[in-house]
Amino acid sequence: MRPQIAPTLAGVNPFRTLIRHRNFRLFWIGQTLSLMGTWMQTMAQGWLALQLTNNAFLVGLVTAVGSFPILVFSLPAGVLADRVSKLKLVTICQCVLLAEAALLWALAYEGRATIGWLLVLAAWNGIASAFEIPARQSLMIDLVGRDDLHDAIALNSSGFNLARIIGPAVGAFVIATAGLPWCFAVNALSYLAVLVGLMRIRIPARIRAPSTTSPLEGLMEGLRYMARTREVSIMMRLVTVYAIFGIPYLTLMPVVARDLLGTGADGYGVLLACVGVGGLAGALFLAAAGQRIGRGQLLLVSSYAFPALLIVFAVVRVEWLARVVLLVTGGMMILNGALANGILQAIVPDALRGRLMAAYSLVVVGVAQVVGSLISGAVARAIGVDWAIGGGGAIMLAYALWAFRRYPEIGRL
Image 1 (cartoon, rainbow, N blue to C red):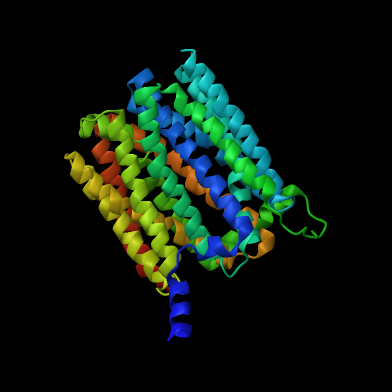
Image 2: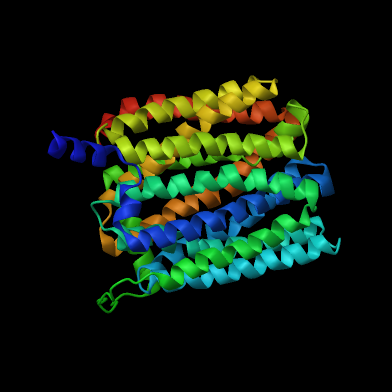
């Protein structure tokens, strides 16, 4: 009986890819520790912006300004990621992000932080992220190979959500005991963890064919591929709608916590942690069972459930119930995002991977935060944060109902 049991257990172990691949293990541990600091900074920065301005639109503007460089630089960064060492590019960008967090701490500690400085440093962070995100996303296949790529993406999402759980909780404790500026200091220190991991990764040198096209021609080649490949085009449109109308609810969470649920920074941190717990559960479920359940069917379910839950969250006024709804919302959001990412990476040829991931990050981070945050922030200021979140969910649900009927092949990807 044992020879039959062992494969079954291996098939449902969500951590098998971490155990199997040393490079990915080093990357995952360092990245997860660093992301804990990043979530502390995100929480503290949102709360600081609200304290400085008392304006929901300006809270969204800080996020939008931080993401605007991703709109400008992501596609050129994708061309660069396909032509240079992705590992070196990620390492350089992490150093730049460390410097940004350290300066933010110094300003906040000395009481010199203003909304202007928050906007400048958010833009600095966005420029570095524009180059780091596509390089990091397309590096994944070099760490685990094609066979374990889907599971690695799911585990990467699990680390992101583990950080979302721990980071805000630690952040709330740090704010209560040491003060808000020290969230930025801890984030600066956390970048050392990811840098140590990156420096220990060993990837066999790859012989790259010399590029015969200009960067502009390389950029146009990637855009033509995305436009002419039907499955990629369909998926990117779905990702775009969900990024614009779904992701910004996280940006508006400080306003929800204070104005709708009547809680403070500690309650805000708990709400973010609930999203993280749900997301962690969703990511581990996908890593364990994604190969046993059709990914296209999971994408369909999560594409309906995520917006429906946002609509429910928009009408909740009881804090404990909001936490429960956010647990499930976080799971569906991560399932949807990780599945879309994995499906796209399974389709794209290696030579175009950096450019596709650049377009993906442009949409999920840049368009979501610039367009999505500005729209949701403006709607929240005009008619209420509940209408901003619930209305976005309604648009997503309507699009999903149309898209899965119009393109039934999505469920078979």
